[in-house]
Length: 508
Image 1 (cartoon, one colour):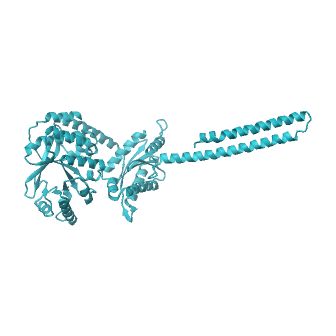
Image 2: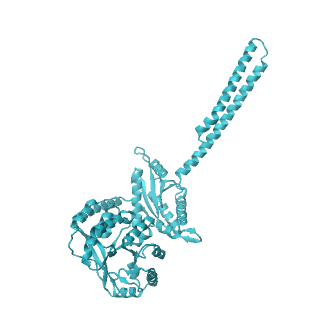
Image 3: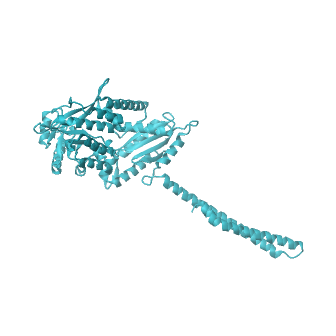
């Protein structure tokens, strides 16, 4: 019941009763005065007037008490409602909308600017931890993060921005103080939290920006803090980074590369180079297609430079389609070799990859079983049900699925049983240390045995010496790839599908 309803329901009868008593008291007083004027005893009417007035006063006091109580109750209920609406129930942090409203108030206006610092905190590898330990652990980890934030930023406001990302508003714009507090937070998380009798270490990345020196708009301030957070992740996570103007230069550089890459798709500056994959007898039975960009001015541009840019825009979809169409065109020239192509995690976030692959297969008439789609271990461990469903759909079409760079992330052996894969490619970091690292030896041997039981093939990546080849073969690997066996080379082939390639570029 809200306040207006309470007043309407209970106030009206009391009001009418009070008015009646006051009217009766006034009438009695008038009668008493008239009788007194006519020299008739007026004791009874006077008493009635006094009683009526007293009753009216008591009624008014009761009404006041009732209204005060109901106002207090209404205020309490409103506070509880606001608490429910403005607070994240799981962690106790402010919800995103409330946090942004408080940030806008903290930064002031154009005329009256205020000093404030905003920090964006992201829990590192949260998806893998959630999958490995369960959702109950994930919930406790988020609540533990907020508890640590409140301990380190006692004078700050914490809000949940979404998922495992949180924001902190700190009064003032002392960046050194903010960074010191952020580093203390990271250290506290590294000490870990107790879960089912074990101590589990956590890690977080932090981005920091301040008003007014970096920005005065709350929206822009959040964007700059997010840029700093991205830098923390790019430098290895588990660190706090202050926003720097150079980050905007990097953003402009990414936009430049994106424009150049769009032109490269249209002008046919991209190439697909093939690296052989060989069996134990050193016979080539498959190749991996690796994209290269031959810029007319800058020369060969590293994929490490343009692939991340493509992944942060819709260009990765057009780039992925270009690679697949190029591989389809080259397939007849490669004999009986199967072609492996890399699939980006960003592509797997959308249904377009399934429809695109089916469309190209129908247009070109190729057999999907002639292709292997490689996804990295990092993508696999971060894959949700929708991503796994897309991988399964591609596999059902006939494509083989390979788990690339195995051993570089948090992918446990249980993923081998649950993910829809046909092949595992062991990361070169293990192959290169087979000679003198017992852990690498045990890891590779165990993986090959598990793969054999699961009916999966194993490829050893990064073979550069005869010793590495022999040791990988002795450990149970059945296929091999690396500079010792062949470097990526461009096949100088006819290009019957140039028109289609240009159409793909134009759709970007």
